[in-house]
Image (cartoon, rainbow, N blue to C red):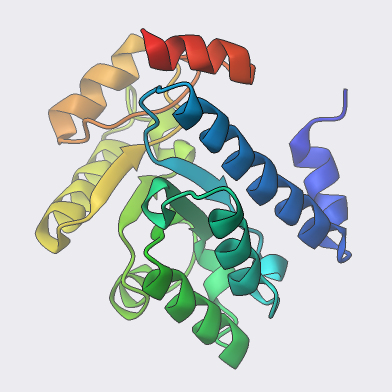
Length: 206
């Protein structure tokens, strides 16, 4: 098995990452339709979008055509974008970001605090959600500096009315500290490891 941290970097260096992204969007919407047809409750699903795909003039057309193909409400989808992807303020990125919002999809700023001009992006792109990077979560238990950073991010998100997610949670101590800081939506191996669509369907039906 070759982990994503290895093959994604290689795919990013070519247009192959766009093919990967298109496959993921299609597969995700197909699976959501399968779950909906089984009368399961389907929460909003997040999809990572690469910087290269965000610079593609095919992105908005892909999202529109695939959601229509499977009769999926765009509100069921959230696109996760890293801060670094927004450093390139080209016209196509501005257009894609605007069309994504106009379609009704949510935008999540991943790896928050690791890039540049974070506050500017929150304002400019009408971000719906920020994700506290796992670098800060990893040090929460033993680092007062990391706890101070997390508290600041929580306060900012609350002031701006943004959804907030702590990612990379791996133990109950991190859960307790994040909850104390005011972050109550968490993700990580502490809750679940990657699972098949069948296993996820069983979770959704529980």
